[in-house]
Image (cartoon, rainbow, N blue to C red; front, side, top):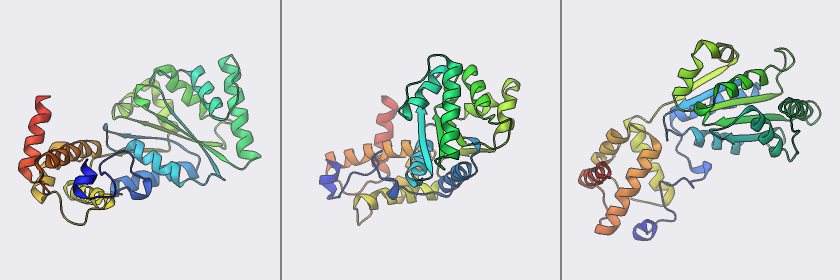
Length: 267
């Protein structure tokens, strides 16, 4: 609908955008650089950010850049993850049938990771998303998981990804042994005003637009409402484009944005 009306090659502001076409803000590039550091040094760390700030996109970008001859990427996202399920999920990723007892499944996974590292010359990259929802027993299990060969060489990189409350949880005294083991902690913030403008224009260019669609005032209004959170920007821009299609308008100004934001508040 949007694509046909504007004569574009693809629809902008969707999750389906290829990592080759992402808008790379300075903060996003810094986040990816920290992730690459964790991978290359086989470290333990965490990345936090508000809902929709681009955390999962950064992980997807990292995954697509990894050399599959050197790394094995493992992604878990389960709010109800428990230690036994954790090892079972990881082993299933490797195509193995996990042992029944948690202790046996844990040893099975540790042996697998060491074999991967020493014999296959590959590093396991384990990413646990929605980590702010993990229970205390799971966080403690992660602490034990990082203790390979009594704090010597680590055969894997482990990344926790979650909302800002993850940092608050890790500051609790009971979890201090976990934070002490973390090599990297990074918070992905929203885009500033100039980046929001550049983000919107980049999305349109990738879609195939050759002329302005949003006025500067419209983009500034979108930034003020979304605080530069990319998912929110996508939602507002998509709603504005649909409104423009219905009204047969080729240019979206501040009035379009105000009308859409009013509708959002009424929902």
